[in-house]
Amino acid sequence: MGAFGSLTRYDPTVVAAESEFGAGGWLGLYLTRFLSIDGVAGRTQSRLTVGGERLQVVRLGGTLTGHLGTPVGNVYLGAGYARLFYRGIARIDDSGLHAMFGNRISLGGRTAFRLEGRLDFVPSSGLAAASARAVNMSVAAGLSVFAFGGPPRDDDRNLVANKRDTCPGTPAGAVVDERGCPADGDGDAVFDGLDTCPGTAEGAEVDAVGCAIDSDGDSVANGRDICPNTPAGAAVDVNGCPVDGDEDGVFDGIDACPDTPAGAMVDVQGCPLDGDRDGVFDGLDRCPTTSTGTLVDEAGCVLDSDGDGVVDSDDACPDTPEGTEVNALGCRLVRDRDGDGVPDPEDRCPDTVTGENVDATGCPSLFVIEEGLARPLVLEGVSFASARSALTEGSFAVLDRVAASLLANPNVRIEIAGHTDATGSLSVNQRLSLARAQAVKAYLARQGVRPDRMEARGYGPDRPIGDNSTPEGREQNRRVELHLISNP
Image (cartoon, rainbow, N blue to C red; front, side, top):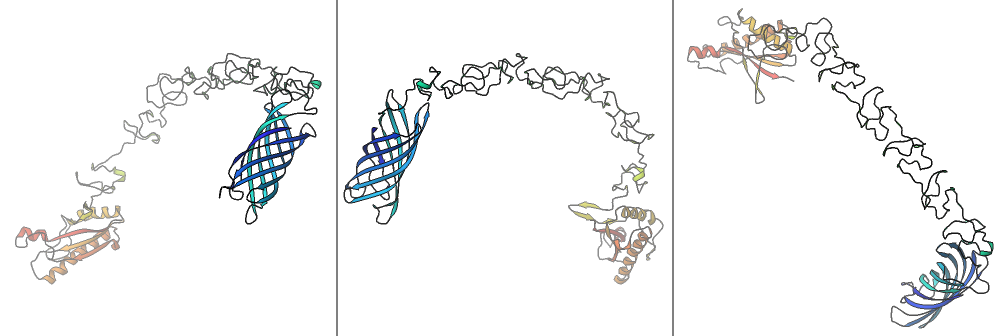
């Protein structure tokens, strides 16, 4: 039995009463050590939150309660029926369910301090204009007194009564069996419940709280560690002895290079040494003094893969076919008869004039590109019989070079433009300029240039580049030009 003080918070939307302190009492009967039935009665004097009228609330409840003994008291929880009587501006009774959770802490003898929280649930409250659910919450604190027998005495508080406890001096907190004697599951002499490390391996040395001692920090406890002085950080086997996977004398875990090849010399960190920096480790290097940067074979000796007399480290062309004449860099000697930078085997115009600009094929570059536009090419040296369209023999060498360049660049399309001076009639000059352009086109076609890549046009005297009133100017105007149409 007991008495308590309480603080209740009423449902603000249904009950609409202020939270207030109240008082009451408990009365309970243990059916077993773990199950009891309890009754509670309490009274609270409150006021409505609207209007301020006084409201008296009396609460009666019955609960079925379960108990669980713990080192910090008798924890319990329960559920049951509650009846609420509201008196004041009206007389209203509510019925509902409640749940509670609390703890009963012994104060010695038959007295205990009791603290609990409770929740009342009313499915349909009469306080609301329309039927509504109400939830009230409260906390209570008070004293309980056991009468008519009460719980059996348990001096060491191990939940085994003195009359059945064969080990009455058990330390507080130790787990005990049904006879009240402490258990030691891992056999380390520290009782379960007090043992912070209850799964300690058999034979391990432990400290006062039952945790294994590991002096060398290798995760193998003293007492089981065959090698108790292992260096910090070294990997160990199940017996606590260090492992050296690559057998270089530096233990795994502190070996910065754990995969060193067998036989290689290593530094204090376990990494292989390479004195001549040839990529073959000392201890495996048969030629340990190779010059820095020299390519070597797997034994560390100088390498000449293609057998051309130039070691691979100096050989810019290490795959030269056997017997090939090479230069000092180990590359094939290439002849360039006309000195245009294109080797003779690749030069389609091997007799280019020294200093002449050439393309990738070694042929004269037909066009000069300026600001994205190709400048017209005047065919210097191309001439015709007087007042005729027949090419002179001296024109052939120039046109041969043009043909070679066009054949080396098959995507280029050109316009062949014929021009005359202003001497004679316009119609005659127009026909003559076209005929001369067509003569150049025909010659180039005979050299293998596809006709569909060339367009012949005659412009007569319409586009002079010199003064037609002077012999020099008229000679400049009598010309054939190439214009770039496209170069994809």
